[in-house]
Length: 77
Image (tube, rainbow, N blue to C red; front, side, top):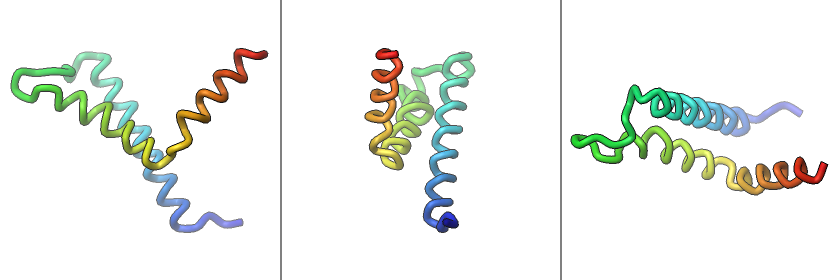
C-alpha cells in the first residue's frame, strides 16, 4: 500500500517536531541559550521545549501511553 500525501505530511511534521525538540534540548543543555533571561523571561524554554512537545502530543496523542507500555514491558523481562 502506497503512503498517501496525508501520511507523508504527518511523517514530515513528526520529523520536524523531533528535530526541533532535539535541537532545543541541545541548545539548553549546552547553555548556549539560557532557559530564563531578564529580557525574554521563560520564552526560550517555551519555544525550545514546550512548543515541540505540544506539537508531538498533537500529532501522536497515544505516544505517552505507548512509551509507558514499552517501559513496563521491559521491566517484566
